[in-house]
Length: 466
Length: 64
Image 1 (cartoon, each protein chain N blue to C red):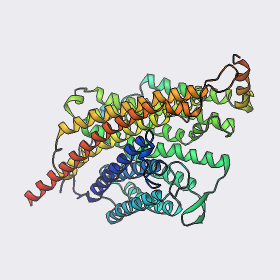
Image 2 (cartoon, chains in turn blue, yellow; image 1 turned 30 degrees about the vertical axis):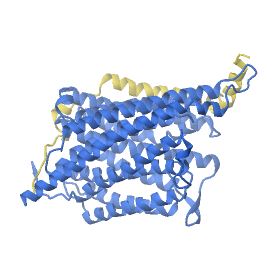
Image 3 (tube, chains in turn purple, red; image 1 turned 120 degrees about the horizontal axis):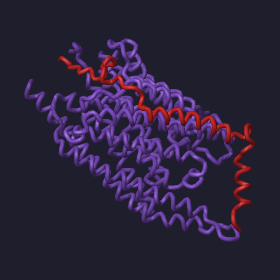
Image 4 (cartoon, each protein chain N blue to C red; image 1 turned 90 degrees about the vertical axis):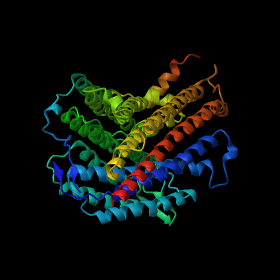
């Protein structure tokens, strides 16, 4: 079947390139802060100190690379699945520009130390307002397409896109309610335990609806497209979707185990967290059974392994995460370096793996050419896999060591180790983590080069044809 | 410009009409049942368990 429309891919291309730009900045900052942890001389003045750059690393990668790529990829998926061009293409183009201007301002504000002191919600209130406007522009276009779609059935990816848009809007607005004291300083509307509870309801679900649902939307769309194998079961995909959406928003309290948060809220949060294993693994199983029809795709199609390894790390992540919520495990690893190990398995092993594979699929499709080099893509795959595994495992080991040392007591009940002693023991692992980070970033540079060369190839072909 | 559709995402394809895997269904229902038990067992209003009490007990049983 053919479609008579001409799709406007310029906005999608712009978002992909923007995401790559912000991604490189965020990755380099990540390398610097990882080295600052074991060599304090690498802090350069207040602007390039660990305290400011850690926040920047997280925000630039989550919002610049993650959301930037999601905006572009969502526009692409939504046009295809609704079988119509965007309802307001000019608004989408404006969205792209506003995104980049906003990212510049947001980055500068964090450099300057303007910070709400809420994790993942560091931006001060004027930036928050800009982000809400940005999100509304995005929502108008996507929901407009969904309401006027030319295809009656809604594929599961569309549901994940809609869930992302609605949930992020609610989370972001509620947690960023603050009373401004000046243009650059505000105070959270909620106080004490309430503030913590709202913050982690937001913080956990920001991960859920920026790093889980959007990536699942990509996974469900691009895995069948790359392999030519339809999804194993629509029914399983839809049941997994609704149960994931139902359970996710209750789980934030698992970040506050053993705090003054009331016991019953913690318990409820843990119960819903454990339940999340089922819908997460619904998607994992669906992915495996899809490729199970023809495992030779792992060899013959270079993208299949990105998706299958990506969903495998999603599966591991969604077992590790709920386990960490259990009280006894939380008491050992919470506040240790285990946690960044957990986060980076998700972001490096699942999120970027699937985003990169989606970009590898989209770029040649949009520029009407083939990928510049499958060989480079394969090299990228193996290098980032090695870097990510080294990173995660190193952090798990040092996290367990840290937690165990904090808990050890002498016969009289006093602590066996000072905090300093536990910190010094981290150094070799932190150094190893920097090496792992360098490996990962080298892998990502292969990706960037490959994408840019593919774009160049497509542009050259277009010029020849003209 | 013509865009090709392969319609891999079609809902009416017979090769996507697979039942829910049994093992997964057991996991799904099992976790719901466990969740109900867990909420009952660790909510102070139902069983009297509390974080504070658990801490006191663990300190008493710790070898000196």
